[in-house]
Image (cartoon, rainbow, N blue to C red; front, side, top):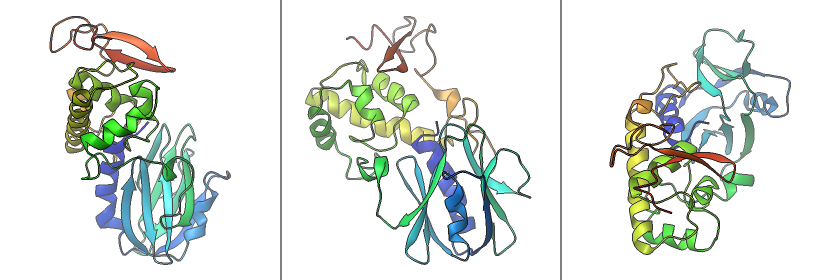
Length: 263
């Protein structure tokens, strides 16, 4: 599933193209998850923002088009809406077309009043690369729950945008076993720094492509070549040389080092 770095890479590429463009026509796959695509015909795009893993296209009538890419969603320019896996498309006033391709159809689209959100988008924690995300805030957030730290990160409540890949990466870098239920203040500080580091590097690398992810130019990210933990079970730990291990934490496959991330 695209996480913050992947969605941010797409946002950065879409922004200069879409801002100021008027949507003159649109279409969608026959599903309630994608039918809102046609609700914004005639609107002009005023901004392209991101909140966690969600893309937010601000419209000139005070609403926002909210796009979640799901597991296999791809968002990029297309020549014509003929791809059988296309779930939504929007034609702009310069005759360019933005297409939302999603093979497994786990993505979704909504049109809402700006800043009026429901579900996960309404309860997101602070943006991890913002000033609002601090070691103190992270410590206070995870202290409220007895759930495992990785599960808390995936809930999006302590901090927004961290999914399975970057939770494993951040916990590994901080030397924290992802299955612990409590953090010390020192551990929270280390995890805070690690989250910011792994996400910043991934954004610089254009995101992580393991299978489906491509950016708005149809290109793969390169961060998969720099992963230190995620998906590397049985390979040697870069810190101690011991083989990395794999376990399941609350139904999510998890890679960790038994030596560097003691339980």
